[in-house]
Image (cartoon, rainbow, N blue to C red; front, side, top):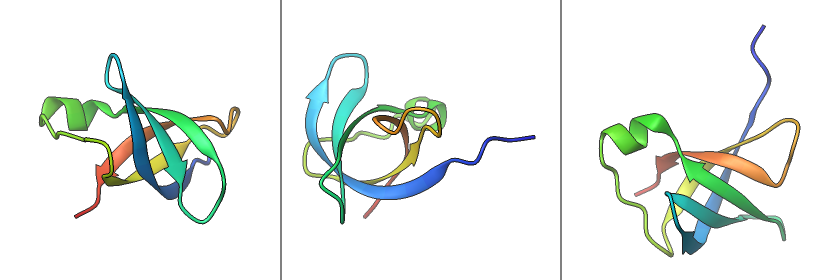
Length: 72
């Protein structure tokens, strides 16, 4: 059985080492720590400060997540 992850939209506010980013969730006053998904690394999709992204939140720890899509 697969865990239920919630998909939210956010904005990159800070870039950290090792493809880790601080992301502000849109519509909420929450800032989380997120890393790039494997497919985004393989396809060399660049993410910079100010980009809008889709983030999968960890169901066990709501302060961490994975960036799965960069919005246009």
